[in-house]
Amino acid sequence: MRQRAAIFAGFIVGPVLLALGILWLLAFVPGIGVGGSVTTTDCGTGLPRHGPTCWGDFTPYDGGSPRPVTIDGVDEEDVTVSAVTYPWAPSQAFRPPGVGAAIGSTALALAGAAVLTVTITRLVRTRRATRRRNRFAPAG
Image 1: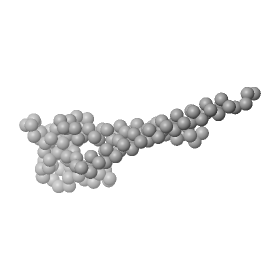
Image 2: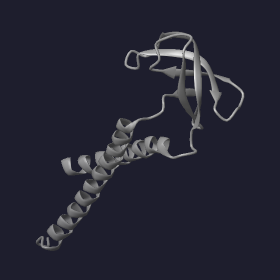
Image 3: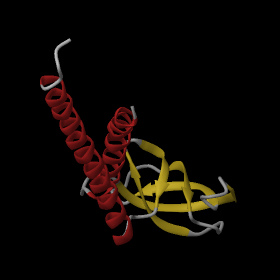
Image 4: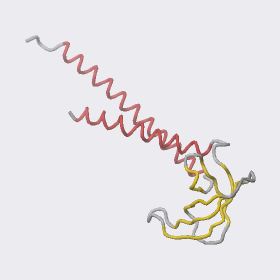
């Protein structure tokens, strides 16, 4: 019974980790995000684990019209910081990702792939053992 639970959990956890890692890796693909700058107008306390949240106007570097966004990790009003917006979150600006984020997202994707690989291997071995046990079981 524990084997089944572990296999079931692996088929949930593995794909979720893999998908999150791949989504975060998309942030590093050139041309996916729109680069620009955010001039903050107001700051407040966001979620406790994210720290301060500021609101401001995002101006794309390509000359597009400014639009209102929120940005985490900036704690001052009336400052201009470089930022990126992505198609899946147009009202949220992000600081440009660094090397640490690339390493973290790669590790997350690899961990998901490893969990999925171990789960599939465990499923195959369990099926083979069951088949072998049933083949040599006494009839009756």
